[in-house]
Length: 170
Image (cartoon, rainbow, N blue to C red; front, top):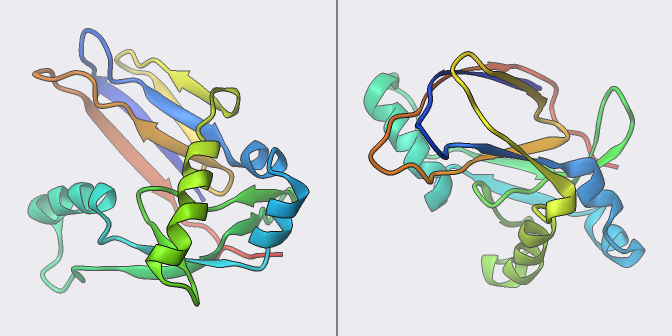
């Protein structure tokens, strides 16, 4: 449902986090693209390179012995927020592998367009961390991306993620 990060240690420069508004990402698509996407289901996988690096790090540190090596879930491409009733784009570069019923090759042109679209500057904001800063966001209608631009420096964050509902489509 939601996540919260608190900054414990930040680099002298860089290490910001970008947040993207998925309501606006959906609303700024053409009507034709909205109609195309609304019935689609996305196949999401922890095996994608961007996601697996983070997961590999967590597995080394704290995984249970019986933890799966790959997780796959299907979610609607256009999600309806259970509280606001608003539609939000619900795909991301780190996990969305393809559309259900399509190959990855068939899915990639549309997914690549959506990945570029959802991070347009007018749909995002950039959060600059200081020690003790807290960010709290709704995972059902926002995405985040930590900017890895602080080589040789440490960035220590503690995260809490709140469980939520199963994503519901149109």
